[in-house]
Length: 394
Image (tube, rainbow, N blue to C red; front, side, top):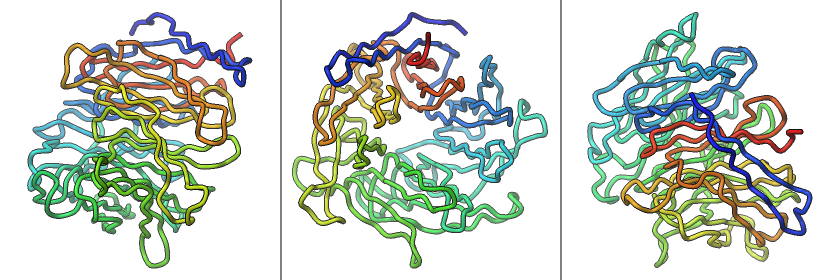
């Protein structure tokens, strides 16, 4: 573990003249395999947020505050681990963990795997995997609160079963219902199956005990998925069947200070554009949202993390790109921010300049100081970093 150079972001606009944001980098692992997916949760119940990582050949967690690395599992499948979900779903103060593996996007028939991980009494020891049914090309997963106040494991494959080049069967987004005995049968509910490739989805927070909605990004655009009495209702936010649009990859939600919502994506999948969507001022409530490009210079954009890093009473956008297919272009993490309510006036600053080939990015207050910090995993740079938010530092 080694501390790297201080990265300082200055925000000099008139509306933000009193704001000076600073992030201090801390590299906690310089030997990451690929760093497919990050989750942030309290693993051991000590009240601190720990870091979990789905890496190529291991599932690991880093224990706050010293960031000691512990294995949860090693090599669950022949092919890579690809995703992880962690959340306290039973109220005991300790996270439940699920993992996706057997990653092979070219095999839409037999690839993929989903595991629930049973913790030992000492959570620093190896956990026991419980293999669940799965769709091929397991790719993303999150724990999501349902209408009964319980939590389901929602899993998104990359492709539909037997899908070739994005054609064929739709992607089956499934909710896995946790049984009383986790070794028993996990029944599933189909949430959505009309997209032909998906890349990521977002869980939109809801008041305590209310069901959470989803935002799904994929080849056909963006769809909001809301649970109801008769199942999940689909509402398209952006339809990419029109010429010139080629789908969305990463997706996160946000809001301006006045409460107006927005959605941000990276387009297309592994794309070069950072895109903001806002509700149309004069359109129907359930109509398509307005699209605007904030940045078109990303090289293999692959991660988004939205939070109020700067204390502006709105949400800002952290975006990471990895340049996985092109050796030469710089990689890194940028922060986009605005104080305007109309979706305009966005400014950008570098958080990491060429030291993070960003595969995934997550926000959380890791040191309990009231500021949101940032965690990033690097594919080509093979590292895991914390960017400590020093906004309240003396």
